[in-house]
Image (cartoon, rainbow, N blue to C red; front, side):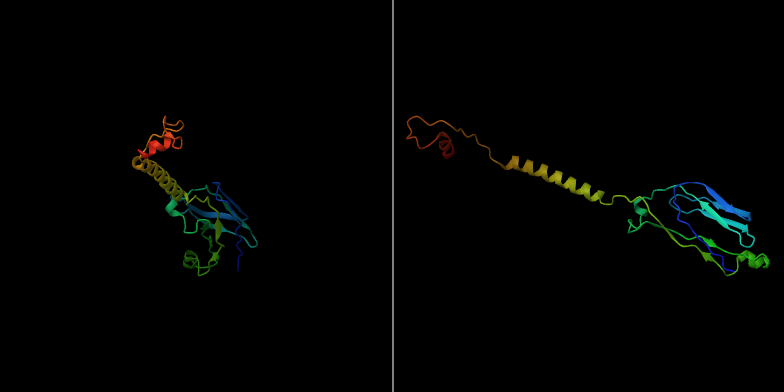
Length: 173
């Protein structure tokens, strides 16, 4: 008996669990996640009559990752691991029911888009800081090493031939 499992794209932004089932839940456990350590775990034992439909919607709150937790290709997103469906036969022995036999059905992996941080920001800060330091150092070096002189421009000396201006004579001295 092959049971098709269809997983619809979900957005991990809300926080509630909605089971819609034609059968009944006999046992359901939920282990909440530990932020930045362990994902959530939901286990349920459901009795389904033939041709029944089980649809579970589990919404989650959006969580931001630390900059060290991003994968090397942060633009790609995050892989949400698949759900595991273990069909059990009601007529099987208790040991077979406990271990679920050897059959497991895995849902497809979902790629979740994350808010991608600007990883170039440290580079931008370093470039701006180095530019500012270079401008300040260049200005101070220019002020400390340049020799300043007063130049008078405009009137001629009395008694000169008129070919030499006051500015030229002060530069020769």
